[in-house]
Length: 273
Image (cartoon, one colour):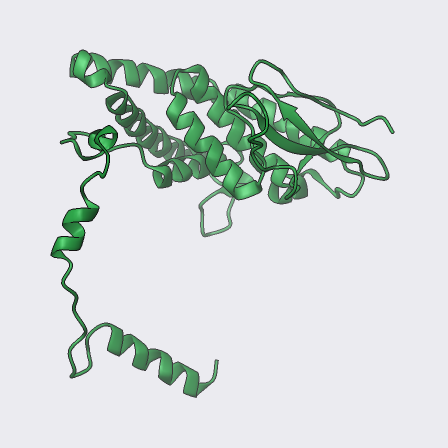
């Protein structure tokens, strides 16, 4: 960046922060904000109800998954800025923070579903704490599953140089990571949070797997993004049907799309060509 560009940049900062002599523009927003804050349909009245607990947060859930990835694969996704190997203390601190945030998000989900209105607060807190504890206890098994997913993707792609590359770079591994976390929450009856996490993974990778589906990953597979085959299809009878593409382990890779129904366990393996 040239000195002239730097000068213009700081001039812009000073102006945008109000350091110039002339006033910044203002807008009359009172009526606009009033209208924006009110639901337009009677069916949406619940949006504006007085809520002791906010609704679940997509941003918070994305952060939770990032922290869980740091816990599951600390050498690859650690938040340490020093570049050193993460210590058990750092891993434990990250996991503890993730579980605390997850606890609060599940509380929000309970309120959204009306549980708090029908149950005593102490009982709800106890149920949510038990659910988060159960989720934490499943993390070691979830890590083992993801390790087999990574190995399967590596074995299924002759171009893969090592397992680290697969973990860092393959969108299929990112998608299956989000999905396995979402599926674990789905099994604990946190269906909304599971769906949100699944959609975050879908947004990041273009690969859509419903959280109630448990993939049966075969020894050699690679889940890949295909713009034409990851879109929801409105032509099929079930609203839960999802489409994703699979690239299988052949020297000449074969791409095809698979329509997955909720009651089907997809078997992703070597394509026969």
